[in-house]
Image (tube, rainbow, N blue to C red):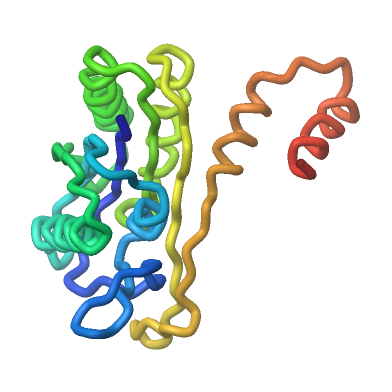
Length: 213
């Protein structure tokens, strides 16, 4: 069972990130709006079960609900074109577009609660995330939730994806669009929190060895 957490944007226009391998739309390669769908198109297998958790805020253009539909349509097209027949369930978690200790704690607990509902029913649960959109604070909350889930809920953190594009006068420049697998940052944070060395030099050697793997 895969759990995918996706930060949903509020903006009305999504930028195109990356072609999806082997998928076309109206005779042209499908260019994904969501970085995680580029990855899912590579790894999903037929009849697989997947639970997707949308982290959504309201504000700005307030096109969150429309952008959730765009995600679902994108994933549905991938499933249909690859004849995967993915069994997908969805869930939404509201995330106020601000920062306060109690709000962050509530979002953290809600993410953990959603993951636990799945781990209570399934073994071999793996976690994926797309932290491209929404508040810049949200990826840190997702990292914390993943750290807790990996430690206490017996899950495997597989991939954390991020998409980027550069803008000129608020217009996205297609040539600059890219998708990055940033799971290494999560692993680096976990390693930094867990290593126990006698000196900073020794600790940095451990970090360097990890980076050079």
